[in-house]
Image (tube, rainbow, N blue to C red; front, side, top):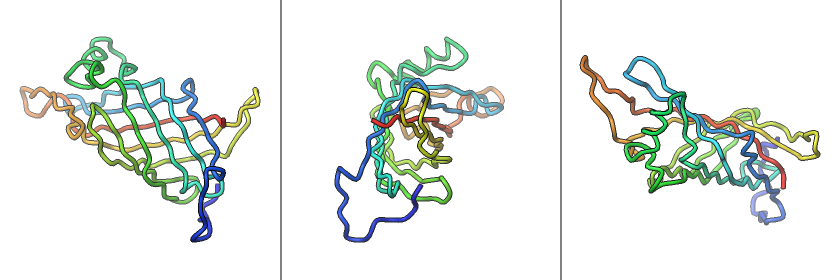
Length: 191
């Protein structure tokens, strides 16, 4: 991993980048939100697809785009899954995909980066920053593919993305918290 920058005024061309595709079988997005103000409910989204354009001499010049099918949302309860897919939450009929497109990447020390970008959920786009940890060194799998892996996390306010449904509790508070913690575990395969 190089944390050094290219010489100022040098131009970066397409040849400076390698292409890495998300491996959907080994990648997932998870979320966690407070339920009844007493515990957390977790869910998972799968079927990630996307491309990392990697500047192998300075990762900060790289870009990443990710798409996630909203229909893949699941928890440990089928009724909750159906509610999450309905209009109150993801509204998968109108908004079938969640997307993230990086706008900048900053080296944060060690094997860590801060990846800022535009997150779109339910047709609403907001700028978020992912804390990306443990970007691995490239490694060859038993079939000759070169892979890298990483873990990322961020927090969002669900209401900013149109998830406004809630229910008051008899003793005060609400059924669903506003803050949603998002984590990603992603593997990329070099094209």
